[in-house]
Amino acid sequence: MKVIAEPGVPQVVIIREFRAPRELLFRAYTEPDLVKRWLGPAELELVVNQLDPQHGGRWRWTQYDSDGKGYVFHGLYHGEPTPERIVQTYEFDHAPGTVYLNLITFDEADGVTTLTQNTVFFAVEDRDLYVAGGMERGIRASMQQLDDLVTQLAKESNS
Image (cartoon, rainbow, N blue to C red; front, top):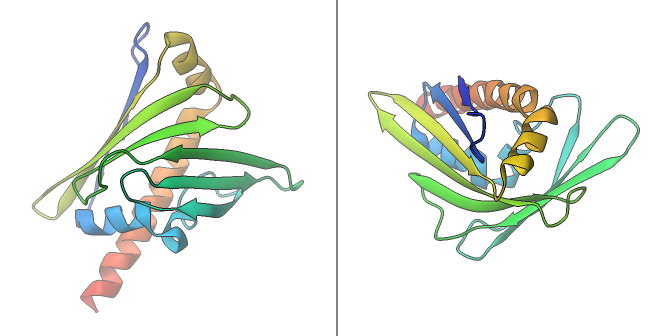
């Protein structure tokens, strides 16, 4: 997995390959029962409060720590989500008004899907806070859990 966060650029790019069809990755991003199986660090419980993957649809989830403290994230879908791409805004309730834009693409070739997540911020300072807040650890954990999930789904679909 590559995590690209160039100094002075209000952007983070994540690139990860999966040995699974892009349709499975798309499902993992758009089906509540699948999202909660991979998103976020394993030590946090994820509750999908809302997931409406369509143009103008809203998404919202809460991650709970072992003390029951909740961390709420939410946003909107822009354009119709497809197995090729998802465009969405993203906001953390502990930083209201700090909104960023995610473009997630799924490019499939020869049984391998390359997921690219391009996250764009309004300001470099917002990006720096995102990176300093443990983003890379969380992303790496999530991407490994996503890999485990789509590998399992691929095996089940081939059975």
